[in-house]
Amino acid sequence: MPQATNCYRRCIESGSRPEYTNLTTAKKILANGISEQEAIDRAKQGDAECFAALYGLHKRRVYSLCLRMVGNTAEAEDLTQEAFLQLYRKIATFRGESAFSTWLHRLSVNVVLMHLRKKGLPEVSLEQTLEPQNEDGPRRDIGARDNVLAGAIDRVNLGRSIESLPPGYRIIFVLHDVEGYEHNEIAEMLGCSIGNSKSQLHKARMKLRDLLKLSQAQRAARR
Amino acid sequence: MTCAEFQRVLPYIIDGGGSAEEQQHLATCQVCSDLIADLRYIAEAAKLLVPMEDPSPKVWSGIQESLEREGMVKPARKHF
Image (cartoon, each protein chain N blue to C red):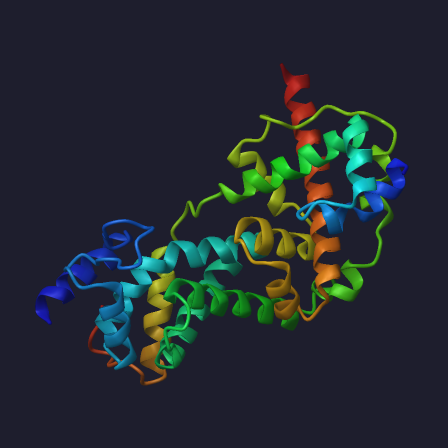
């Protein structure tokens, strides 16, 4: 497959993703004209070139997920590496019951969660993070009107604020609001109840609201 | 219904809507409706966050080295 080899090499060496027609289309066309599905099928047979192509196609999304969940570049890179190593080992078990990107995404989430559990972060133990925390409750808003955020969030600010969330909050927020997982899926992944997932997400959003308002006030003070 | 009572159930109703009593409170309370507007705005803004960065090339090098070490690919083929 010499022609394919060159295409994949270019993608990997340049750090760019292989080109395909449209991110939203199910059939992604890689640089040499083969579909993502063909690349998956060949990678399942051990075709390393196609695995490289899949890496090029999905590395950004997997890395971004890891980075948002752990908030640390070096850790996120290690986890990205681990996720793709697991992909290489497990791709033969992919049966196409869900989209490949969904399957890989879930695999990557599991890699991150496993890592955080191994680190023993108390925040990842939901029993701890789901306990009411005085500083994060909604009571401050009760009865007092405050400025609304509408129109005041920019992407950079939001990204920074997410990074500064406590890990337990950050994980739930990223999984639900950024990555689009449902509460029942999060509950299953994290081994908690759906109610706990909802409660934790609410606290995360409240904390983010505080952080964003603080940043808004600081910007206003500088003007 | 008070604001405190409303905000206690808010995590469970924000996505699906609440009871008639909760809806009534929301319709008449500016504090709680501002709060909901903020929380929904944050959730909507988060959906628009897109992956922005690629991992550094050393990630791919690390993958290659690991697979070669495990004998899953041939070492001679540097770029697979």
